[in-house]
Each structure stands twice: as C-alpha cells, then as structure tokens.
Image 1 (tube, rainbow, N blue to C red):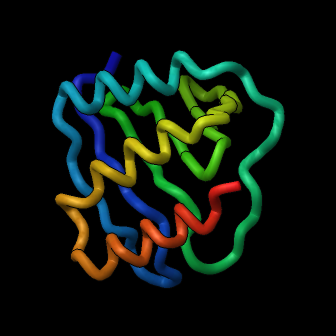
Image 2 (image 1 turned 60 degrees about the horizontal axis):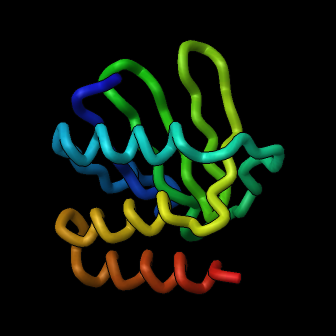
Length: 118
C-alpha cells in the first residue's frame, strides 16, 4: 500500500488542476476507503465543462478518479469500477481540499459537488 499520494480537483479547462499532497495517514485511509467500496458497473460519466471530479494518485502508481457515486481505480494496468452510493470518498476529498484551495475556488467546487447530489 502506498505511503503518500497527491490529490487534484478537475475543474478548469485548459489549465492544470489544483493539486496537493496527502499525508501518509490521509493517503492510507483514503486508499482503504476506496478498496472497501463494492464493485460497480457504471463508468464515469462524460460531464463536459465545470467540475469533473477528484483524482488521487498514490506513490505506487495506483490512481482513483472520483465523481459523484463512481470511483474508477486503476491499479497495475487494470481498471476497476467501484460504487460509492453515499459519496463518502468524494465528500472526504472535498473536505480535505478546503485547506489547499483558494477560498473562492473551494466555494465553487463545493457548490458543484452539492449540486450533483441526488
């Protein structure tokens, strides 16, 4: 299991997404949360412009893309779909992003995450 990770939020077109480092504890807890999710069947939707989810890349090369209730986890050349009905992983990433994003950007991202709530 990875000891560190970087997270980003995909919200801009034509610019690098804001990103930040996760602590070893945050990284481990997030990976455990993703690994504990049940297998899903729905792929990530093509959402166009605006908020398009969070991405987490661990030091071991594993990568998770999180949008709404879908988590796409790529590990060792294989991609797995996971279902997060409660959207706990997205919420954890949103809350964790607060300390790393400009306050205005955080407000925009939070409103778009909440707008996507069922």
